[in-house]
Length: 88
Image 1 (cartoon, helix red, strand yellow):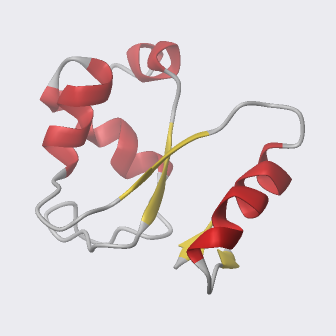
Image 2 (image 1 turned 180 degrees about the horizontal axis):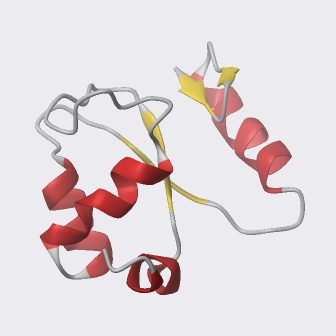
Image 3 (image 1 turned 135 degrees about the horizontal axis):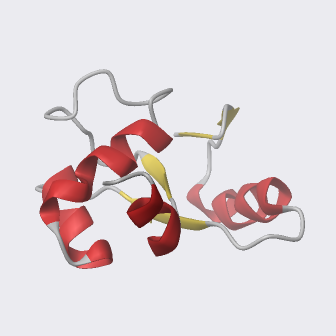
């Protein structure tokens, strides 16, 4: 699994990598499970599925096609305010 350009071999290490990445700021992440879609994740987190583009843009280093996401991927979730500011 890659998170913020770092390889995470063991899921137990994920919290450490997220903490290292955050460096004093809160970072929300979502770990993709089988059956997840960007639309559903957006709807659950932002209240509107059409804001999936915010997640897609924030994780462009991992997502080549927004219709193809894979279990085990770890995506950064921009704050709700940032999602609104980008028009997502």
